[in-house]
Length: 509
Image (cartoon, rainbow, N blue to C red; front, side, top):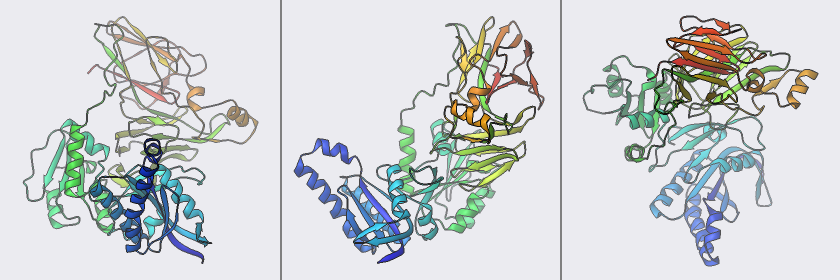
């Protein structure tokens, strides 16, 4: 048939390997027949064609991207009603060459790679399908950017939302768990708001006058605290709502209600946020809190020309991840900040997934994980991204605690960020030797034992411990880094900077 633009769909039975181990031959035949009986009629209904059966999966071609997604949604609806097998579906749209009843091309390879990431019971699709589909007809959200095996660069991936499912972003789920979620129903009066509320508008048509009046009736709030629950939304209404930093929960009313109830029923895991006190029975007089990512300036020693770090949903900065919320890249021209998922804003302006802005200093950043502050610095550093974390250590009067990659006990260990995926190297033999020797910013710029903090009476003293890796102090009322050459007095709310880690001195909560 030659080459034509098609939407390539893979379906796959979830947990098929486990089912093989648990079923006899007749049971496996029954499972595969059930899969085929479910998928084939729906594919035909929307004009698709099964190219081949791969045992527990199908390769299907559609002429229209929207029809492929409608078929996938119908499959998931039927699976839910049947209560039997579990299926995942993945797709993308692009040029496909059909030869001897088979399909070949980059779109086929990409769809297969997306399938490898797709969880059971979900429908994921690539940018090609996103561009070609009728967005007003398909409920969808973006789930971020992924590195896929054998596919150059990163790919943005989207998810189609069936009628029976809704996925809550972390800010909504977190607000529900702590009791700060305010559900504002259409026709209801504006409620009394708790401190730091998150408002979820329910039952309001997107772009409607009723929705605008409801927003206008509220006191001044951070746009990131306003969320709209809806199932179908036009591209224009989505952009108008989201571009100011507001959030969306895509789902039917029943699905959103079920997701909220499930969140409230979930057993909370220990977050590890309790302060560790060095001696049992002793109350801490000071907390050392890892509070941010320090960004050394580049080029760095003719070795690193630029580098990046990714922020995970749990608030940790890592070298590179498929499931990160944002990425910060440090270049010779400045600090680039990139949104990798929905729900990210800078100074109240919402960023689309993949959008990059240049930071200048003083920005307030909102992410699904929480808020970050960006502070520009100097003296070898380009800036710092600040937010207190749950990694903390309590220190009582008369005690001394160490900081570093591998501090002596008692100590607060810096994050262990291994790997070189985040580094762009300078040219030349020095960079080549560093790369071969396992150079990372965290290893090169911070020591195993970096500094010590001692609490004596009302005084707090910082002592640098490493001869080559410098330790800096940023006073709470200043924006300059001061190198600690010898023991020096510090105060609560001062910050210690070494390597890529920022530690704040906090009064115990």
